Image (cartoon, rainbow, N blue to C red; front, side):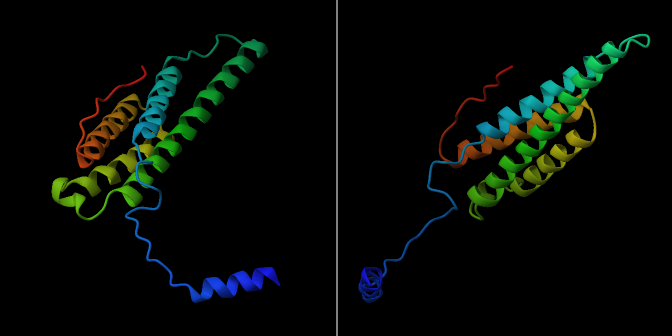
Length: 157
């Protein structure tokens, strides 16, 4: 009974128009999470390339090698997917048509970066992982320029 009374009051009140330019409240977007994930992709790729299989037929050595290899691959793929997710959120939720005037290559930059995420999942290719990190850096600069800032690009490694 109380809920129907409250509901009838709300129905009579005029609703205010709400405006937002993005899905989340302003200020929640930041390319830093894409950078961290892309750095992990590069790190795992380097670790995979440096990993040496054991010599001989020692089952314990092979088990350790296979476990380590599998873990490196799992992290690399998970972080490549995370990079893609974070980039797609920026591309589809933050950047708007008016940003295309300042960044005419915006769509191509994001499209190539997303494709590099996939390439890093499919392959163990250090040059692709480095190219991905470079793409994220370019997006970092586009993002902060669009906000009227010039935040420094810092990597953890």
